[in-house]
Length: 211
Ligand SMILES: Cc1cc2nc3c(=O)[nH]c(=O)nc-3n(C[C@H](O)[C@H](O)[C@H](O)COP(=O)(O)O)c2cc1C
Image (cartoon, rainbow, N blue to C red):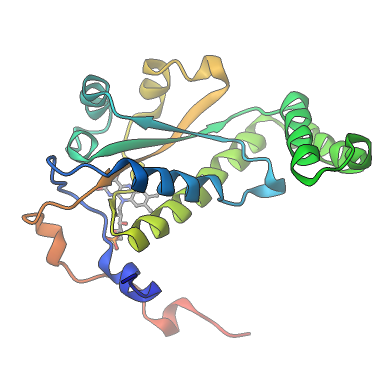
């Protein structure tokens, strides 16, 4: 039986020790990736790319760029959430074509939206644009974490890695990409000392304010 929303969210935790013998079944992984594909993004542009790292040698090397965090190699799979740091007119054209096909609408009818989107990207400036696209990876992360919890898959969100070194290692810049987050996914080791730790969260009054 599926867990309730709050059961799933209380069950999940940032896993520090994965069981390296447990692999996510292919069908489950497909469902998880589909849930990521359905993540919303600003304007719907999806300026992100998710790398699914299975190769053990590659993961060993990435581990050294991630403060030797063992989860990178022990988890069933390693996801790297990347953003396009400077999307422009070409990406907008591709997106509008996708929309035109998905909704069976002539491209000409989307011209207003296209011009608005292009102008918005043109006036953003490269720095702001990257900030904006990298934020989209955090929305992916949120959806990924929730999907994992719901499916009984463990996950560790990770900002602790050397982004520049990883970008270079995977030759991401050449493709207009930069790494934003790592997320090993798999199954917790029963001896993970973090497994039994109580959740630390602000209480309701501290976190919410009704105005
Ligand atoms: C964006 C982000 C980056 C994080 N980076 C790391 C990391 O590099 N290594 C790690 O072990 N945990 C990392 N964490 C896990 C947090 O420490 C953890 O989610 C937080 O303490 C709350 O605990 P819980 O997730 O177990 O409920 C990160 C969490 C988030 C959301």
